[in-house]
Length: 146
Image (cartoon, rainbow, N blue to C red; front, side, top):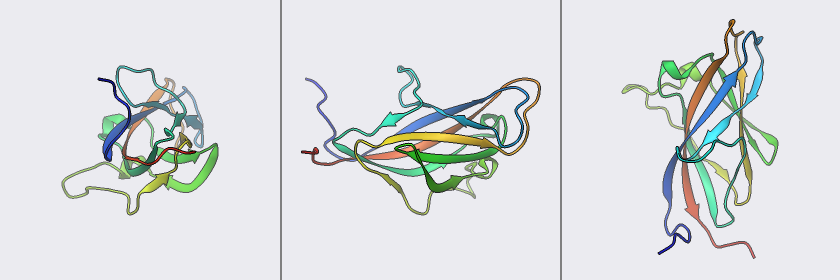
């Protein structure tokens, strides 16, 4: 039996890792490496399948150790920066008292290309640092494009 596509909406968690070079000034921008499955290689651009529409419902840092340097995350769809900015990431940490979720899902249409770009708030030190975020996506099946 082979997997042919989604039959109902599913939730998927992706990790996005930003590696900021050593001695970078504040305002440095870096494209994220997106990991959808630990068995697959990370990629800088994800393409939504033709039979799905994605809904980003949450973007957050899981712990303070995930934040090498604080900053903001911008969402790019089809190489266009959206009017959305998430962060500073230090304020997106989830706790029992602060269970952050987006007020409204970000809908990404089929065949769209998705990227995450990180902008630092402060300079980095003498060694490179990484900042990692978690992105929760609901993948919704739709009829194929004809």
